Image (cartoon, rainbow, N blue to C red; front, side, top):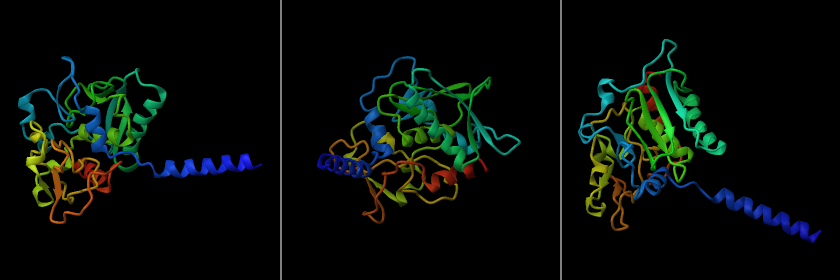
Length: 257
């Protein structure tokens, strides 16, 4: 009887420990998954976790400002985004991806649907790290969710938000009113990750809890913070493990849900 009681106590302890263990933030996961990745010639130009066709495209204005890369809205008011998932994922890995896809159905008018014959679609596969194009590119466009490090709910949502047309929070046009970039702590060659973009902010506030916000040590070259919240330096940020209310609101406003 005492042995059974000991087993029960141990199981309770393990259960409490499991509840205390938290999934790392999306920015930590992306950094680890993409760090030191060497991509093949068949993969696109990838800067951080954003894919581009060329260096010139990277320097262009955001495509959503003119609606050039938004996914079309159907007559029923829904935005249908077709997708395929590569066969090299296990059933468990596929379920993580599908959970991320389905999470948009719960809170937005976006519907990720399996491709039949649609011309434009996202092709989810395990390439080198986590990355996506920003917005609709046309024809097949890769969303890479590497089996080694990218299969988390937060990273799936993050890359899908890129595919819908959203950039990183710390690159918002009004970033300097809320985040102070500590340029001297950034790893040499990664400064472009903090370039401000002429973003459409959808009349929503800067969101420290956005799944698109990186953490304070992102791209650090000396283990010191690269970002500091402003004016309150004590605000926590970059710890999101899923889309925030503002992330959802922005999708709905961009696509006029």
